Image (cartoon, rainbow, N blue to C red; front, side, top):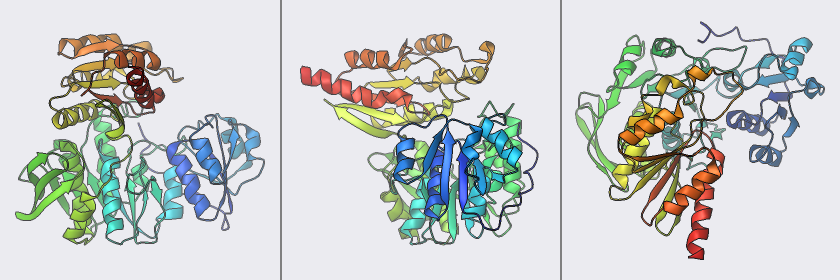
Length: 484
């Protein structure tokens, strides 16, 4: 469970020039390092996982990385230390930081202090769709000439980055309910002081942090209470939990979704290329929108972003034009390659609902093709048994399912708490898809490439890089067909 309140913000030196980041090679921490470097600070960092591509990316920006978590990493006596979620209190440099009395912040504390204290924050929250919705919103705002800053949990297609330092009055944030650092055990979005926000949906997730859905609902209720009366809140009106946690909003609460009782809804949806839909607001048609993404969930994402943009006074035609040119986020149904009419796709889906949504979207887009779903249980939630019964139905519309072994982490997860991957494979098989359990990535590649046929859609689903599976598949398919 998280703490009940944020810690008091620490006293910082008046003149900060040098900053050390512990855990610098995480995606968010590396981006934060680059943001600080671009803002004129001298930045160094330490990490046990200092390897490409992040180590190379940071080196290209002149940011020095120290290997490991040694106390000597702080011998350069920085003015401020930023501590990533990966860092534990017992790490040597964290202990040395406390011994020296160095001021220190978590990632969200840093974002607030350095980048959006004087801006309106537009915060996208919910269990699913945060990255895509916040990317849509940032692109709309940029297209409208608002020069937004943003920090998003994925590489945006339109900007080619997951952050931006804008000079405008707004900052777009992906509002994560995960906690932040060993000394700052509250949800990230509690630090973001949302002026406007969305709640896309609400389900149980982050089983390593939260005991049950009640705890998650509580942190969302607290977030809702932070939105000022002059702000606004957009809620998925088709999601009962999202509606419940937002009941106490001081700010105007508006709803979006597919149900026609929502304030903003979509109808006459055509899942083609692009997806099109008529959008209605307070009973008045806003006309037809076009979006180069597939799936019902992306229509919902579009509606959430549109609602916030309307509240910000963006012209309707600008919103439509921006969405029609939206380039999706990396690892969200990302096309990796095509060989002999066999398409390889990378997707971030690892929660059962996200897996189901992705599989159903691909089935909708490719109704007459054989669909492969290759899944890696790597996230802290997906490796746990809590969703043992929820995963199998999520794969039901695939033709072939391949499961790798669950990722092993040094987190002392008890055997009885781990997902039973053999049982999961058996249950999926009983639902219809031809299902195989193959522990190692290279063996998965060999198995799939041997059986793949022209017209197949192969989707690798993982919250991580999946051991390079996607490019290995493309390379192996090219070799197979060139040899043939």
